[in-house]
Length: 113
Length: 112
Image 1 (cartoon, helix red, strand yellow):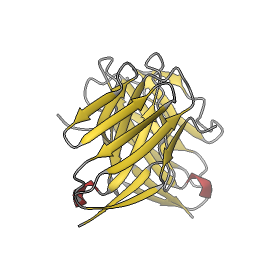
Image 2 (image 1 turned 90 degrees about the horizontal axis):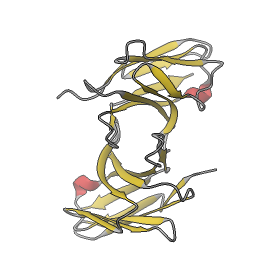
Image 3 (image 1 turned 180 degrees about the vertical axis):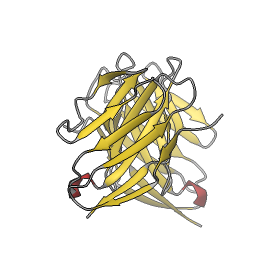
């Protein structure tokens, strides 16, 4: 069974540029999470979906961040105008079948100069 | 407010020793507590977990001790190996709500 895949693995931007991250969860998993993990900190939830519906996006900076999961499978997280404070690793995780276990992808490491 | 706290921030032990990682939480409705292991450049991976109805969970060299009254738990790694060197995250949630709260992690180094 393939794990959670993410792309790109790395991104380097100037402030004000836009970037998109892509996530392919484990097949059949209905719940998909996006986390931000600043250096030397734990993951912090940005948004999560059940199927195509957003369940909680209260921690997503809505003025610059957006996330979609249109068919309830793959998902895209976009930063419209990146700031230096967005420098972090962006992790995608999925879970399914009502189980508690989350499976994480390898993450996308973003550096905003 | 930090919902989940971990200590120490970093820990160094010799090979063969027992490493003890601590975690505490704020919300008394949390009832599921996974520990994740993360190596540099990788995403976190589930190591072991416990539910609040239990006070102990063992899996090989890894044991969670849980104290519901004090809202504390600890991860004990016995016979520590250099390959255990990683960052360990304690997380918590109420299973009625799928949001997980993570601590800031403990960086463990095992010296051969």
